[in-house]
Length: 481
Image (tube, rainbow, N blue to C red):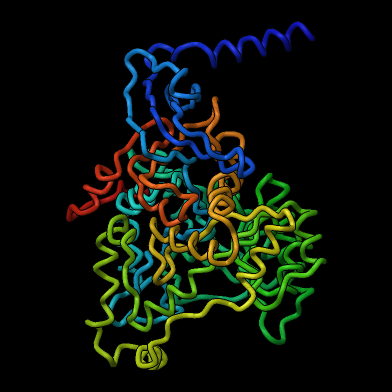
């Protein structure tokens, strides 16, 4: 037995030391300052490094002065550039576009844009959405709830030439109904009993989801214990199939109930009160992921008061079709706008950040709970791709350091993708999901938006080459069957 183990170890070491096998593409990123987000601050930065990639994986990494570039390798000159692991946005919705028509249950503009038409646009425009994510340095996303057709998005991403890795949850197990979003394939399905939750989970499990998601909305008069039993039924069914449970639970009492019921991933901040020791103990015991989603409220406020303005990153990296639609409030006849929206526009409402979200983020991090970056992209004013930079900026403003925020977006994000053994760090043997940026992201987290190259599974993309097809009229997705 011991001889077999030694032999296996020797084979692995030889494989790492040997040149790439026949037919494997070779890529060398030379002279980069490599940032290792998983390390302590004093050990996180390694200047003048060469990273050799063979096929889809990192073959070796070391000082450029002593790390040879294999013969025949494609070389990227990375001097005066910074190399980080590929980013993960752990909370997105592909059935929503980020434009003004994304949530008719919140802002009903269907008199101007029928929701079925908006959904068809989202599906047809997937190549541009994929490219917006990849050009933003995001090599992995988690769709935390949507129609059954979002499982086809996962398959389309696997087939696409330029797309991030996609994890999918499927329809939300919900305490409330949202009929405004149902055009024949509802993203949100109301259940009222544990048995109904188990049945919905069973249907979703046929699609091999990466998560089961519960929309745990608790309103005045609801029986919290009864709702907790529904969440537990969904979680038990998911866990029996080896699938993690994600839960939307934004109040402290509701979040605790979700954790008791088996939540593995809280996709929003606790927003109504400071987290307490009971919450932290439950979260540590379950070893959960915690996603703050700080910007999304502000995005709604800015967009629905007609004050949303694109950032430089959005002007460069977002889908230009969505950017053009963000000014549509100027075009929609006033009588088609809900009264509350007209009043919001008059007041210049700029949005609302829940009062406890920022403080809770720092406390959760300090308690050793894994925080991930998730923008809730697809919601009104939160655009696929560059929204990740707005979110990370808010996380730094809430008290995380740039290195901590980068760890949330990479090392911890890989765990949200269930790929912690494959991605999230720059090390030999890992999948080569990497981002090369033109400025130091530890000096300012905003520098992550200065993407120059993105490597996904060993394939290198110049960002300007990724962006070019997005501007072509008529860019269409593969049909989703």
